[in-house]
Image 1 (cartoon, rainbow, N blue to C red):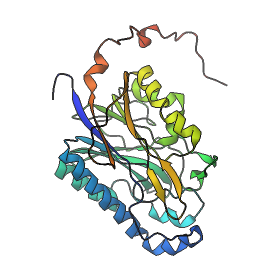
Image 2: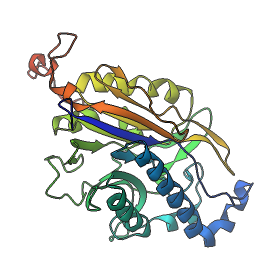
Image 3: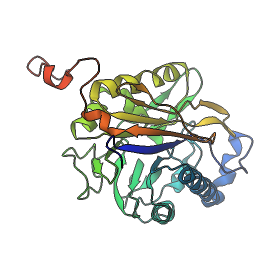
Image 4: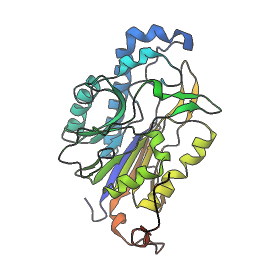
Length: 314
């Protein structure tokens, strides 16, 4: 690793890889007996993307939110709860542990988690390049509403994080809701989709030592698209971190909701260049060494913060 601590990182930008989807939303129950096929098609697709990323020198990759299936929260169809799986011993994580070890790559895999308690979570599993599961991040804030394009009824499918993230020795955070893992590349954190809108999330991760935060998302709508290009840049500059945001791109049958993609990395000094030669990957070189240098603006936000005048909102 160079003195600038260069890390080649990647995001996926894709959609549901299972091609035998019904054409009408009313026919979705016909998939109930084929959810394993749906999961396998998406896992296989992402394993292939890992190989493509490796060929371009990638060391860490983050898949999209709920990557083993389509984004099902556009409607309330209870059949999708059967897609949830264990975050340590489920088929998806078992496969990806082998892939991470074989490719010597850190993988952030956002899955639909079934906890042994029976609860379900929207969870990112962090897998080291040795194949070890370092821990999980459970989505902290759960959206339930609609915009001018469609609905996001996530409250029907999973709970908010309970802070039980199977924290291991490589987690350097004292906040159980926002783990940060010390890896061979640097300190990594995760904030899933809706979490990015809340002011305390990136602060909590940066305060715990995160240098690179991955934000896998499924997002759509005019305001979301506008903020997608503002929030990461502001948070990266304000909290002195790098942030990679992954969004789906395209439409998924039978809902046909368009996802705008536009996945990218941002750092304290702006948006990073996409080096990828594949349309389903965004790849960049993250110079983590920049985080320890004086800010080119001359600012010193940690030093000049007025801790004495702020109080929690009522």
